[in-house]
Image (cartoon, rainbow, N blue to C red; front, side, top):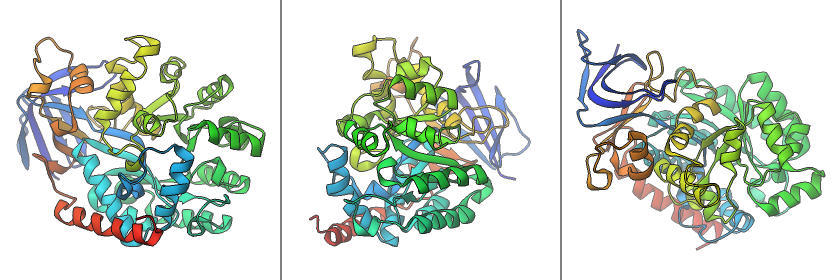
Length: 444
């Protein structure tokens, strides 16, 4: 048994009572076994002095593309469909096994450094096994899956799939990786969006999701042009069509959901569908601003994600929380998205989306030890006197304030030094990989 004792911290529990206490956390193997003042176990393998530090639940990002991290800076100043057709799809089509691995490692290193402990990741069509290898080695908690694309005239040839092969490859990956490391890694079927998937594929994804009891992760209603295409092809809006196919249920995670009508909101609420709000990406691609205050009032499950590096340029949950709060205030008023609501979306809201609210998302005895230790003793976070701790985190803190990250009871970063991702290897390999992909895609 491995035991970690964290001493004398301010602990933002995110439990049902919203308790914020000063005390200790005892971790045994992968779980929190005690929280309180002056814990004195007979033996601890590791003691962390966290005096004047703040401990938070690890962030849970419910929409990430690790395969796109290498494309940071390669898709700037474009709207969604041009961004996909001119930059992202050609680059994804050029990926190889090594580039997928280092793209994933590059993204995971950034995520861990900014306090994210769980992600819902969508890969590309090929080489997804190598992304899973990076996830396994890094220690991050993840739901991930290969993207599925069996339709689309303007899709590069290398990304065009046969329906049967796409389904079989997905099942093969699921059977290899789902439940890996005592459930730290889970599989999620990942049809890209309605435009790139046949009805046959989507219906079979529904069946497989039910058979294996795993999540389905896709995009919906991100862009007005996308919605027009879906309506022209199906006669229905995105969410109505997904519901028609039987996909709208508690296993479905929908990224974006900016342009929903009232019928679609009702379907999402009634079926228990989860929405991943990606404010940074939505703004950069000029897609729009999701109606998150209204969704939360309807008790729709809304969480946060940074999306991919080429449509956001960073994977920082602090940035997403701040944007999620600020972009609503000019229209809905200063209290529309307060700090507490946004912080819930980043923690226990994400846990609800991935079906693990009883395991992660808050700091409570019996839950998994997924947490981040913040050093908020700096100019940009002071004065601290009589300031709500959650407001400090949402409005003032930055990813540079994350000092230590623990996932599944394992220290993956301590004192800003990564333990499971080798920066000295990953950064130069990332540069070599993107140089190779740009040449292959003829985009230099």
